[in-house]
Length: 102
Image (cartoon, rainbow, N blue to C red; front, top):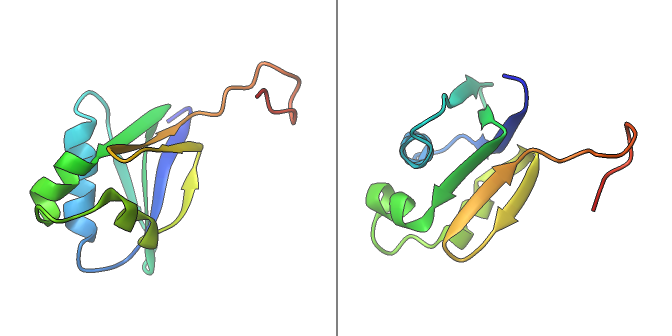
């Protein structure tokens, strides 16, 4: 994977359902899951997203996407959060190494 992005999730009862939701929302790419015991790294190449609707399909109709933050201990890439989805994407670097383009 050239540009791995995605969440690092604390282990818990909902982890398998969250991974399934992420896979459903990213059907055209491989989603890698790296189990580190107390946490799981979920990553795709360049861009990964998960929607509130898909999370609700797995976790119940009352699930709020803002609750996702309680299980996400870290992430790779840039994260964009709205009331409907969370997106992790590659940080674009058009400047010399070490300088972030804004």
